[in-house]
Structures are given as structure tokens and as C-alpha cells.
Length: 547
Image 1 (cartoon, one colour):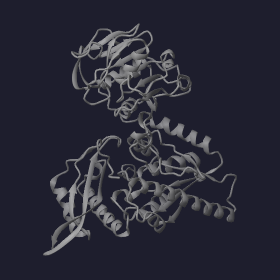
Image 2: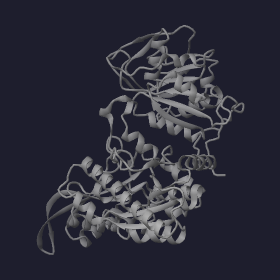
Image 3: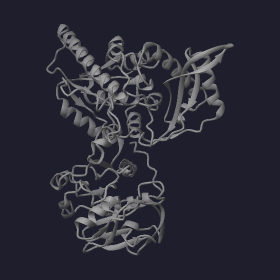
């Protein structure tokens, strides 16, 4: 049995087996109030091999009670509890008897609703601090008397609610951590989930294991078993079509669905004209011949390019590709039904379901964070690009996984490492790596440049050491000199980043000679390009893809 990768700084084992949630895995619910770190909290809990789920901040208490989580975390957020329209919590959650940990804004809400005093400072305390820990707090068990922490808050607690006591303080705050052990309510004015709080992971471990009594039952084996059961229950005797792209996500979904429903699954590979070089041959060979997944190939490249003609806005591009994607699927499904009927294989169910490789980061980035629609980052092809009146019901078996968890699932399902550890490729393909209009000529340029990048990364043994490495075609032309002649050609931006799950990323300090080889080859081999630049921005504030 393969368990999710753990990076615990010290081993903390739960002191008893969870008996509060018979028949279900341990679970921590995270109520999202719009913090930039909410997803990091989710990852930290998953790394403990405990399932975490991010839910809206206003989830009613009765719905939480029905969900039966072992514990609740209230995330931070940019608002003040005194702001007009500030996100509020259902105060009845404090009466459920479920352990609760409030972080920054979550702490302020807890104190505010339970009768404490919260002061609006009008300024943010941001940066490092030293926490002085009081004796006897289970939250800080085994961590010593002083801990380095990271602050990021505006309000601060100035008076404790009834039943609470001080668990830790800093020079700037006498109530940096508070607790009511009887009701199992805890609050932190700093962020334990970030790397700048070196022992914050252990604080979260104490909450998850010792206070919430979670067990380490979030494993890939258990996930795959549960996912297969859910798929069978959802699909019944009906058939499922899956868009196979050759990427990690769709490959894992294909293997998972094939395990769950066998020949009820048909993979549909759509050549949208936005693929990498040779992609159509690779996909048909790997899944049709090697894995024996039923596969239908559709060449819709001219249709997609016609729909994208003249479009420059990145959101419009994504929406168009999503719409065309579903329309092509509907046409392919009708052809499959006709073929089945003609060959006497119609069976009891039709092609009712469309499977997608939607991941948790896709969902998080595509929804309104903290209830504020203005905080939507971008539409994802699998999430925001589908028309309202679909002719399919969605099957999304890995939508609760982060990328590194998907890779673990792929290995557990027996996929080869070269597929599992293939770099991510966006659903809209090369369309979002061409800034501006997508044309056949620009596709030729970016496809050739991408081939150069991948070949040099593989030859230098850097390909599997990074999260993503790719070229972006910029709508910028500049003067150059080639063969004693003046040129006025395009610019390629090179993007190489490292990341764990795609939620945050940093640019990679690859050797200069590797950058030089990539640049020289692109300029010399790719007609229409005379300049290469290197993108050294991080996520955030940038995204990994340029569109």
C-alpha cells in the first residue's frame, strides 16, 4: 500500500483510533475566509495522511454536523470582523462539540462571536515574531517554550471570551494563542501553515492527531477504492466518455475508470490542433495498444482554429475551447452510439457521462474565493469552460486531489513513471501559450519551440527535476540580425518552474549553459523567432501559465 508522501518534521502518532466517524475516514473541514494560505492549510493536513476539504465560510452548522468532521479549521482572510459585508460564520458551529482551530481572521471571528474583545488596529502586523508558550497547552505539546512564528493580521484580540485562557503570547500581543480546552476551541493570531513558522506543522499535527483524534487513513489505496465505488454508484449501467489528452490527469482518470467500470469507458482523443508535436500518435499508441482502453480518435483541428479566429482575450479563448470540446464530444458520442447499434453492442445504457481530470487546484482557482467573485483567478478548461446546457453529466473522480496526489494514484494504478511524471500540460493546449490570436503560423512557431525546450530539458536530465518547462510566444516583434540581414521577428519567453502542487511556484535557477543551448537552438531552428527571454516571476503574484 502506497501512502501519500509525508514531510512531517517529527513523528506524532494519534493516541487512539478514531471511533467518532464509523464508516468514514478522518476528515478536517477548512472554512475558507479568503486567505491566500487556505490551500496551504489543506496541503499540510493532507501531508499528515488525513483528508482535508475546503468549504465555503458560510457552510451552515447543521450541514457541518451531518458531514461529521473530526475537526474544523477557520482560515485567515483579508477582511476585518468590523468591515461591512465581512464574511461571517454560523455561530452555532461553536456548539457542535467539534474541535475548532481559528487562524488569524478565524481567531477574530471566534473571539467576536463568543463574547471576547477584538480591536481594529487599522494596520497590519506582518512578519516574523517569537512566541512565548504557556505551560499545559495541548496545542503546543512537545514544542518547548519559544517558537518562531509568522504574523499577518490587522485586528487583534484584546479581551478573552468566557472560558478561554492564554496559551501563548508575543511581545506585540498578549493573546497570540488562546484556548478553551473544555470546549476544544483554539485560536492562533499567527499562521502555522506557512514555512516561515518552522514548527507550525507540529502545531497542526497536535491539533489534528491529539485534539481531533484523526487517524492516518488518507492513503492512495483507500482513495482509489472509494473513488471506484463512487464512480460505479454514479454511472450504473451507463457508458462514460473520457477526453484523453496524454497528460497526467486524464491518464490517471483513464486508468481509474478502467479499473472501476472496464469497457463501459471509451476514451475520446480530440485533436484540437493545439497539441504538442506528435501527441496524437503517442496517445493512440499508449492507451489503445498498451492499456487496451477503447479509444476513438477525432481530428477537429480545423473546427477549433476556425472558432478561435480573431480572438485575443484569454478568457474568451478558454470558453471557446470548452464549448467546442463538449460539442465535439457530443458528436463523437452520437457516432459511438450509432456504431454500437450497428454492431449489436448497444447494451442497457447510453453514453450519458463525460469524465474529466479536474483537480482540486482547478476547482479552487476557478471558484469565488472567500465568497468574493472578484477573486476568481481564471477559468479552467475542466471547470469554467463548459456551457450551462450540457448533454452530459460530469464524472470527476480526482477533483479532490492535488497534483502530487494524482501522481501517487497513477503509480498505485500501475501507470509507467514516464506517464505519471510527465509535466502538466494545460487543457486548452498551446492556445494559452500564444499571447494574442491563435493562427496556424503562430502554432507552428510555438510547437517547434516547445519541441526544442523539451528535448534539451530531457537531454540535460532537468526535465523530471522541475514542475514545468515550456515556451510562450509573445506578440512582440523586435529587430535582430541573422546572416548579415535585418530581421523583425517574434520573441519566445522561456518558463521553467518548480512546485509541489501547482498552487505556488518559483522559477528554477537552471545552469546558464542550458539556457544558452535552448536559446541558440530556438533562434537558429525556429523560423520567425530572433529573441528568447527567461521568465523569473513566482506564483503568486504571477500564474504558471501566461494565460
